[in-house]
Image: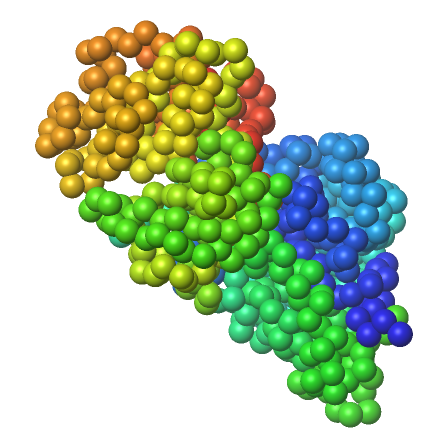
Length: 313
Length: 259
């Protein structure tokens, strides 16, 4: 039995570890370092209807235990992703989760409709939470009714299950999660980055050209754990957890909180081999904890003994 | 090929005010092929600072599987790096990026190498390589002042070397451009690395010449995945083309990208 195998809507994963969107490009760079087939899945960079250049530089700033970024969804656009990036990824035995972004509902709908037909796209991740774009993005991710409406519009056209990526920049994360569940979401991915800012000590001005950016890395892990803990008890759809995952131990903590799979983001920049390392470490950690299958850990922080974990491969 | 290795420090010394020369030993050196490439260093085992530090390679010692880099200890990360001792290990990812191209059949031709501050180090390996190709090299190096100046003697051993400093305490008073304007060198190819204003000044003067500029930019991953260090391309009417400094550069032909 594969102790790490997980089955989620649209996704049959050989292990629950995947690089998070925006931290892995379209995989080409990391493919020079290791075999991408080792990964549970790949969440590719956000794709918009037309190409986007993104924000001016500087686009990143370091913080204690984290980083701020304001890339601004730079990507080559739907056509190029469909014609070049996704076919290139087909050489690897790994399901793709396509991150769908836009400025208005029609953009999301069109991107979702087309990209979900790609043979290796097994699920969509609806990006309603990017803090770095002026229109769309977070505007959709902070109002429950708008998020619900967008989710249902995308669900109508998508050939693949739809996961909605939640923003932590809200007062009530449970309300957001329930809204998109009502909208028909097949799963949640959480959390996106937290809005943050850094100022230059010499000039007194913001370091990022965009002024503010999205905070990621180990600094945000406690926020993410708390939100997954709260949301997973209130929804019936699975959660792919992310936000500051650096080690196999972090992965276990995410499962305890209520995640059914885990994405690794910023840590890929610090250690580009982090995903395969974590995958290799997990089985011995399961031995230490004394469980047979990783999915037995989902929601352990709040579940009673007779409740079962989500899906098992 | 990009590798990750914990390399061993064999030399660490301060060669000017806050400027350190660090030599690391390990198999990763076998992958270093071009002058002007860089490495991405993890300076802490912990999470503060979290990200790696990109630092250029200043000399490759292939015969003893070692390389030297010269860096300025100014922020938290480089300060931590400067505190490491001989025998300590450093987590190195590299070699990264595309360095200075060395053109073929340039025997007897003249190369002008212009460096500013912490942009000087990658020119050192480059100068050696150009000399191996029997080119003539001239160096013009700019520093803030005498106490932050380094390697002038080492460059002098390779070819004519001119220095400038902002306060005039070493070489000509002023910037590298003062020397260039004064001496009006005749050259076949220009290579430069330094602060953006210096590169812009060179671009203004030599846009029609054969020239290569090495850029600096804040980076996330160093391998081209995070899109942090993107710069725009010149002559791009749609304004959608870009280059990544880490993986397409850091060296670009003059006039290719917007400085």
